[in-house]
Length: 88
Figure 1 (tube, rainbow, N blue to C red):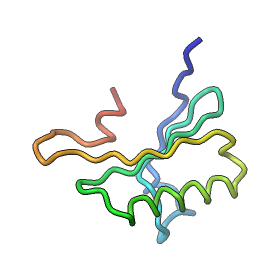
Figure 2: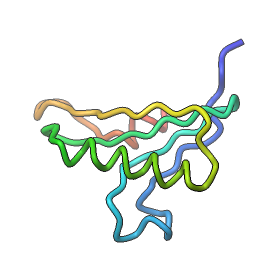
Figure 3: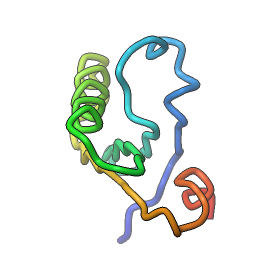
Figure 4: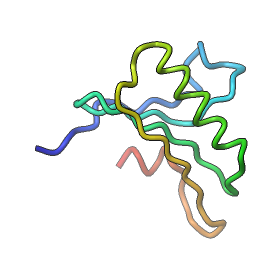
């Protein structure tokens, strides 16, 4: 059976993460898997650091037994942003 997305969280809206290095989005699935996504135009080491810091934060909350970190980058000519794509 395919897993289902339970919720998509814009991490800018999490008060505990304000002022910290953090990724952009967290997706939670019904099997307990979390996908942490950082979206950028040009991938850099600081983007990977944001993924790692976000993973550490949620592991400290005891919430990520299974996690996947994803660095998403797009070309200048691609349209739309990640949150719009995830709403589909």
